[in-house]
Amino acid sequence: MHVDDLAQAVLFAIENKLPETLYNVGTGKDLSIKELAKMIQKTIGHQGDIVWDDSKPDGTPRKLMDSIKLINRGWAHSFNLLEGIDHTVKWYLANEV
Image 1 (cartoon, rainbow, N blue to C red):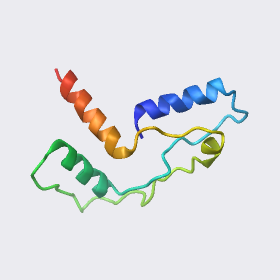
Image 2 (image 1 turned 90 degrees about the horizontal axis):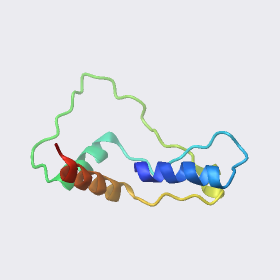
Image 3 (image 1 turned 180 degrees about the horizontal axis):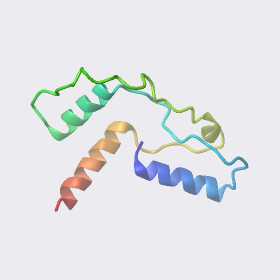
Image 4 (image 1 turned 90 degrees about the vertical axis):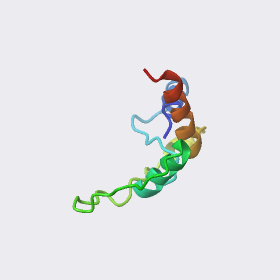
């Protein structure tokens, strides 16, 4: 999830005086760490191999948040993941020290 989308979700909750105190914020889409790594690799133009340490535990198989309560109130994310990665890479390259 892009940081701008999270900030907009917080503003949406405040401005609309949402009645409950807890809401999940997410895009409603799930992907594996491998899919994410390949997406980042393609965006930055990395040509090498991605090396995995298979001796470590896999972690939680799914990390998908159920954001339906917030979505039903009218909030929606603006950035898809690929756009967010591209935006972040461009920001990093422009602000690199």
